[in-house]
Length: 295
Image (cartoon, rainbow, N blue to C red; front, top):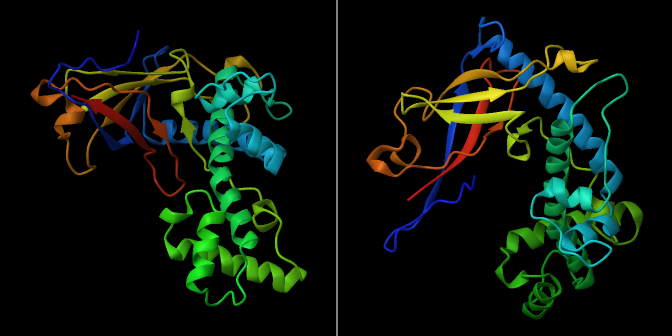
């Protein structure tokens, strides 16, 4: 079923980001009502597993050759890469495995590949910037002339639209590298360590067997079904029980009222893709972020 919103001739779409909290959960198999601490712990275990797998994949491909290949949008045979990062990485043969002794399904691997792929795609802009700044190195890094500003903007893709503070920041970074190594950096991979992977679950990379969302009778709430581990180191598929429904609260935490584009008021009928879960140790209720599109 397509999620594309059908619009009339005089209508246009609008997208908003809704933030809320995962309050409680219900074990779908036993019917047991779970306190907020249980879903929070299970989401944290799953996110930690995904983050570790994505970090390992990121470390293996955070280099100029792989970043350029992914950014080119084509595989070795010249075929166009899929828009989804996890599918693009699989087309390129960049696979990953779960840690030793841990059993995880393919959807967990998808989320890890999606997260690593997005980070690697975003690294291309920083790589071009870090290469362009030394290529148009000024006589005095502390103060560029008008001509030197024009040169550095030409050396960086889209440099004419960059704020001066961005170029100045990269210049200071290159100066610090030069002071330490007595030469200018070759690329961003000499300037930056492998980026850290955030602890989150990108449920958009999963199918309905791992995560699904549906509306309830209350327009301020939605029902999210998740397949989460029952222990931090699941050793078999038995540690991944069937998805359990978890009521969610939309809109601000202090209010149960959603914006019209989220709650479906005024008949705008939004599309609600699966959200992103971002567990935090200091927060008992894992926050979620979801994009909602309505007419």
